[in-house]
Amino acid sequence: MTRPLLALTLGDPNGIGPEVVLKAARDDRVREAARVVAVGSATVLADQAERLGLGPVHAVQDPAVAAPPGALAVLDTGGPGAGGAAYAWGETTAAGGAQAMAAVARACDLCLGGLGAGGPEAGGAVDGMVTAPLSKEAIHLAGYDFPGHTEFLQAWTGAETVVMVLASETERGPLRVALVTIHVPISAVPRLVTRGRIADVCRTLAAALRRDLGVETPRLAVLGLNPHAGDGGVIGGEEAATIRPALGALRADGLDVAGPFPADAFFGRAAWSRFDAVVAMYHDQGLAPFKAIAQGAGVNVTLGLPIVRTSPDHGTAFDLAGRGGPQGGGADPGSMVEAVLLAAQMARRRMGG
Image (tube, helix red, strand yellow):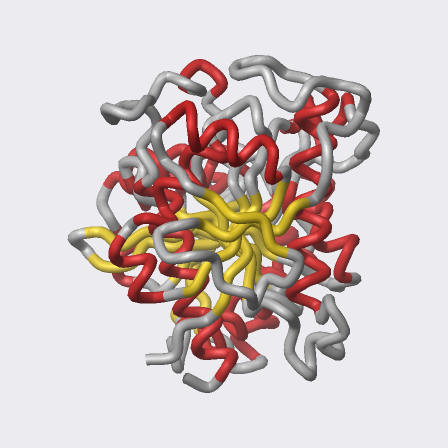
């Protein structure tokens, strides 16, 4: 089996990102599925590895250069940045945001063809990236005007349409939830739910399911915007005016889409298990039930990018940062492990392996 090379960004150094990267890199399933290199501050990673008993680490200049046996290679992105200390567990700082974003930008460049690899068509220096959590507040303090990874990576790569999807393997089969709108206020959602956006999300999702996950004929379920999917127009007209016409046009183009479904009954009765993916209209409509079902084993994947990118489905967990030690404890790396495994699967398909 081909083992792709994946870049693991450290996320916010004040959170659990470095810890889950260190732990995931030691996981036997990860070692079997992929080669990994951490991307971020080598100083931070080495210090936290020593404090948590998760070392050693080895700084490299080229991600393809293997670390000594038993060590994790880290591609150093430099000092603390934004005029702050290297890290301060549990605190929201501009330095933490600056470090997190420097690692994301470097890893993305490596995927796109860093170190002279020739761009995405020729293959990058790494085959995909897995991003540990960052703090949206911290990156704003550092001067970045993006709500999070997804929007930054879309801008950095020039991708026309991106789709945020949460994925998990469950007893009932794979659960995948895509979002029409992402990190926007609820008040802005209705005007952003347009026929064009729904069509773009469904087409991008279906194409990625075929290419990256091997689903030959994707079946998509689309949720309504309003309670009870509008209840025949009694509780809102977006379903009749926007969502149903968009789905009709997609069906005319040969896409297998169903809906709009009322969100509460759809998840409550496990109707999602009959489909390859679910399209939700806004963030909490899709992700609240997803996280309740996935129980911490979910993976965030950005579809529509020219690169492979996944992430754990949790945040920085500042309250847990630094609580582990040489005797164990601390943050659970399960979601990070699943994110690496999914990235490896997607990268292998893109590599033809």
